[in-house]
Image (cartoon, rainbow over all chains, first blue to last red; front, side, top):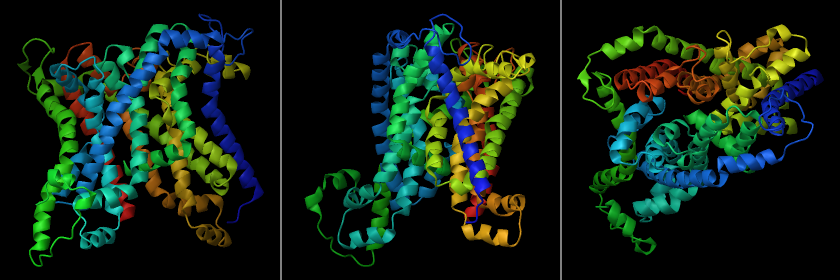
Length: 274
Length: 318
């Protein structure tokens, strides 16, 4: 490719500017978190004496251990179940393709663009009638259902791309459908399944609307829901709010940085298919 | 006939070649396979039907009643829909959602296109790889966190005003989220900040797939950078643009988290959006009927706006 030196320099400058715009807000809340609790610092301003203990204070007031535990319980309830259900359904619709599979698939696709606010009102009454309001099940069970359109579409697309010759050959060798699924299709689908698990993990962790509507106690919510409650309680104490927000963000950021390549490709594929 | 129970219980050792049954074999397998396939789809379909389709149906039902959630509901006909489409406050919320499309969708996609075009030649460099990670952070954190972080940046003592003061533009400083004129654009800035990274990385990936020889040919023919952009780059990333627009437009029309923490819809109703209005109607004003009618209108709006975009997306695949 013919490219001039000047183009490359402009490209680098643009990249650096974009990265700065992305990172500066984080720097700002980090610096602000070090100010004296209850004070009103300016934008980015290093405090005279950094109050590192704010993080400890926020850790205690936010009850971080319980929040982390609650979020993990919700993740454990949602992600394995949703991935399993979607894998089975994806295999059924994408590989076995029974009569009418197309119609069933279209019904799933209809849910892809559904805004959660669209069903939150009746969902509240439905969850109340089930008697699980204010428990973690109130978040877990609806989320599995709400993830199905995307998850099934995703797994169906995956199973549809596995070469048919492979399955034909296995059939000729006498493999049952179970064998075909477990020994051939699932091993070939590990990348798709793990990407799906990452996406669902992230979307569960960040789920806010269901958490604030269906669960009153922040300690039973997702991380994002708990953050909303934390803001409600400490909204006036800027340094403490910043420290708490950072703490609540940290687990996500760590998981992201560890699995960054996987995350980026999963999110890219996710938006391409969704 | 393989039912889920029997196939599941035939362990690895049970694989025996079936006797060939020429003629009827294919058909029989198809009928049995159908049953098995539906048994595999059933659990996912049940969850979906019970927690998504059923609430949608109930929404439609509620939307024709006047109900406070406690006492007996009374039939209201289309009154709730008329309210949603005529009460200034509710219509205003829909208008705000459409204005947010400008900030959540048009601005990030435009920035991403512009930047990606300039970055294209160094897309494989180490700096660009690092940028890919950094620019993705806003996509990974909860939207609530983005809202909280930016509420602080846009407050009267925040970073935005600090920067303005440092360049002598004191007159422009204000509480950006608390001002009737700037609250909605300020919320828009938060959305743009969240979306631009995704759009950039997506579009950049599309650009690097464009055949480099096209550019060489264009340069030999004497095409300038502008011409090159419009006749090679833009058509080459049409699909990626459609994806970005679809994702970001939905995030604008269905926005909730950011606005809930940043402005709660205020000041006045200047940042009220359908998602927030539904939440208020259902859980504070106890107008279940109107909230449900608004939900149906919102779902319809999203589909009406997104479907043409999907067609554009498919246009290239076929």
